[in-house]
Image (cartoon, rainbow, N blue to C red):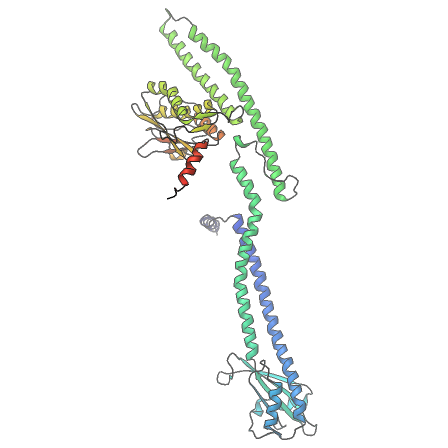
Length: 508
């Protein structure tokens, strides 16, 4: 008893969780199949009973039609006359092969020129003569007695004819071959419909489920892309609609607006505090730099150097907060400005070169040098783009061993620019690849030169996303990390002309 719950838990973990669309489709198929097969079974029973009843009604009608002319020829009706009358009335395909006879009360045949074809002991002659209408009896056909392929049973219709003082019994025997063929055809049709029905239900259910979950997919896509940079995007739903999905979308939209308001308030607070802190930091740094140090004790000068270093670091931290707030707000960014890709890398390398020399690390840029790509332009604010690249290069400098080189490479693929920063440091642990761009996230392990704030990578990614790009982090073979910036490039008219010329085939 105690093992039932763990067993169910293990089974739930082993079974894959189906999506909502698949589950809805399965429900539609199951319900449709149950109704379809149930109605098919009811239809089959009804049709089988209807065919049987119609068979009897038609046989009764034909027996009555045969009885009238036969009665005028009794007693001792000639075989030829009986066959002529029977062929005229029983020529329908419904009856196929048949046998007909006229019996006396003792069970002997009253047809001249033919021996008995029915065994009197097997027929209810006396009971049938006592009735006024048609009497029916049915028996199974054995294999050797089966005159027709597909027939399963034989039907006998018995009708009293003749004068009351000399009664005779008209006996007509037919097989159910035609009825069995009709039932077989109906059975094949129902089986085919039973097989095609679930398939059609699967297609229809998949389409209906897709329509049903499409709004949820849009909500999921919106939630997946929801972030500080996308708080200004509204949900693409009709707010006047009264459906459940529309009500849910309105609630999510209200929550988004509340989060956006709180986030903007937090950003304004952070920006105001950062601006307020900059003034005392600048004052303290200026006083530490201008204070005369002649004839001062070494401990005093060491304290001033430490205070100045910490003020510089604190000022850089405040500037990082201001840049992060600016990037997250997306305000003041001039996307109509242009920046040459090669110039961006050259400026960033020159800006980071003193830090690289201080840590005994070489910077090795590889620029775009082909005639087509060397003038590649990136649309956006050059200062922010350089800050993005600076943060990645400085991060690589901090983790690079002495004497190693940091490679900054540029590659262009159609309308996309890739900037890769590669180092030979300790790399990034696998469990931190997903969170390395989070705020204050810092890789543990490995030797690091200098201290960072844990904001540089988040600022870099924010700037890339602000310009329609992205940054990915990974590890290099043989050790080291690789950060790849992807940015859209400005498509020049010359590039379009070159692509058109390349596609054209010169005529002979």
